[in-house]
Image (tube, rainbow, N blue to C red; front, top):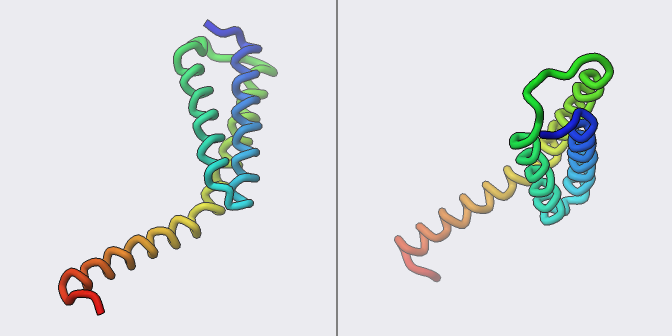
Amino acid sequence: MMTIQEVLSVYAAMAELTEQMVQAASRSDWDALVQLEQRCAAHVQVLRAQEPQQPMTGAERERKIELIRQMLNADRQIRDLTMPWMAQLSKLINSTGTERRVVTAYGSV
């Protein structure tokens, strides 16, 4: 079982990783974004397995809330940065599928 300070340290590390993810997304560095996301997911697994079940109180609780808010804000920024790219990728995939169906139906020129 983790101590409160260890838990807060993991949350702080996750908040830092999500900020790095925002920077990677803003640079369109999708490989770095994926790697950072995997590191963040590893922290989540640690918390799921070892975070104490008793609720935090006082300053520790406020710190945890602030870190979660930072992560949610970063997540929103990441989505704002990645959604246009995802839409473009989806359009490309759909047009490639359409092209393939036309070639199959009518043959290549």
